[in-house]
Length: 274
Length: 237
Image (cartoon, rainbow over all chains, first blue to last red; front, side, top):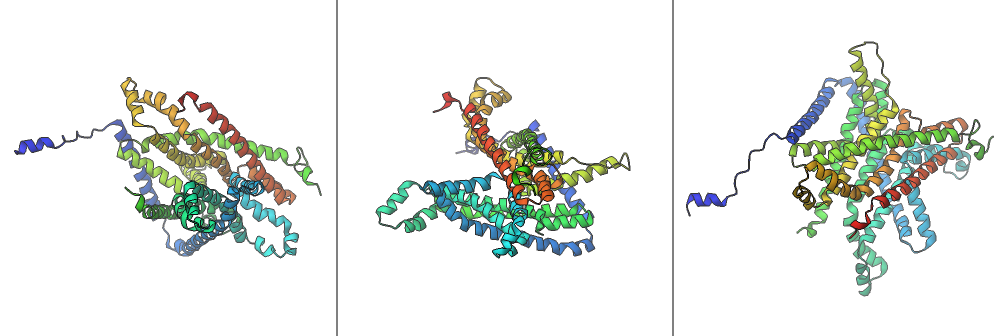
């Protein structure tokens, strides 16, 4: 075979990419983002003042810790609370399923901010009653109120995810396991939940991200999370970079979480890849 | 000490008229944000599914930023950043200029960009659900690419994207509550004022959550009606 014939087997070279309207628009938009990014870096570098950073920098770290703690605690408590709610939603008993439906509908249909206000300011109206049952120390603190409201809220969302994931497992899995003589709890633990976990992973990951973002509102009820520290710093310095730093930190947390979830998902679904 | 029914009545003694005004503001903010968010979201989705890599990159950066930032922080960035930026701009011409940014407009912009970044994802997955043959068919009968988009793709796209967009509308309705923080007299702010004045915090915040619930129930009815009307019976297979 001569060299000329071999060349015939190769695909023809791609035509040169012209400067179409789309390409010009796309390049302009990317250029705009690069300018915005450079502007942000330039603004943060030129307004870098060491005394300011030394004074308020540790606050940001503390705030970050509060945000992470709040989200972690609420997600865990919410996960525990979501189990009975999800069971109630799937129950054949009209009373249980109705109650669970009402719970989920209320927490998903109203703003988290309104729920937080209802707990923090609203329950404060029952101070004498709460004091008489010895719960006032709990509802007096904005931090506990935030955890209380956030846990109840995320429990409603997580219950729906859990229900959706469990119901996504085909009935045949239940029947097959039952025909092997497994007990209902065993079926749930060994057959259903492992399969449901793969379906539920992405929604759960999104819920964590939504909680990180949603947790910013606790700054309004005087909890000094990342957002609270940011607002405090801005009220002291009137320096706009306080908000930009918060934006950078939040973006980094969310992006890390998003990539982490994608990695876990790839890992868990290795056996499903073709 | 007035009773709960007096406090929630219409008129000078009660707060119902103030809360109704707040509900009006909440609904108008959400309705004003919706077209902006849908338009930008559709454009971003077009950019993200185009064959041009630079357009895709620009679209992806947009969604990454505005889906990653907390809504409250976006609102503050728009509200305070807009105020500072516009002030600097006007002071170039008039050194004594002071600018006040409207809470409504900043809310519209902030919620609009957040809504559009989520909406672009919904549109994207709807685009993916439309087979390539639809574009090729449109091309084959001699439609321009704009006509193919308008006459062939969009009617199918809307039907596929509708459940996702309906969900985003409910989220938008709830997110308007955040704008009360920068002083917009929406439901939550009006009830906060009522709670502070009357010291009946639980009553008023409880009532606020009920108003939001009623708004989402009304929305669900509206969404069902729209879904029924776009559901083409002949198309069903």
